[in-house]
Image (cartoon, rainbow, N blue to C red; front, side, top):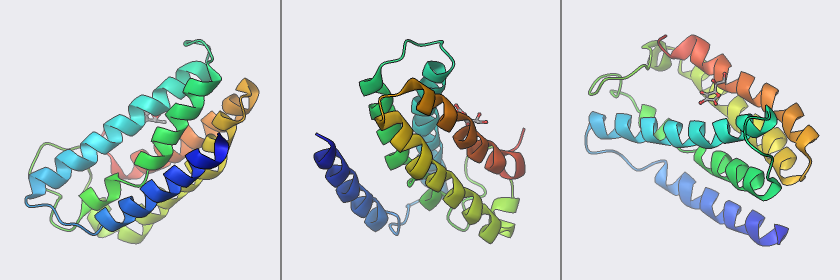
Length: 152
Ligand code: ASC
């Protein structure tokens, strides 16, 4: 069972890297896109948090599925932060995103690494203690970017 999931994730990731270079017709579309991706990622990440915190019954298969969604979608928002998309729709994005691009990219990379290397294997382990141990550091990688780049 495990190999096909990994293969399909790898295929999906290669499709995602192709689409990451596509442009959006309007700044508003890019902003909607990144907000949607972050909303989907946050929704599935929060379900893992609820399991880790005992607010939702632990279900190993659901935990793995949620982490797979987070892992795939973690690659998507960044294309929506293209130059010129600082305006065009109501957004919590701070101008520093476009002024400090290397730092922003570093934060995004760290989150994707935490998700791929900690959260996903922990969620696939079928072990709640491993999920609990991985959730906090991964949430910290979300927060590190929000602290510097998202309006409060
Ligand atoms: C979530 C979510 C985030 C992060 C962040 C972690 O569940 O939607 O944006 O965790 O709150 O600090």
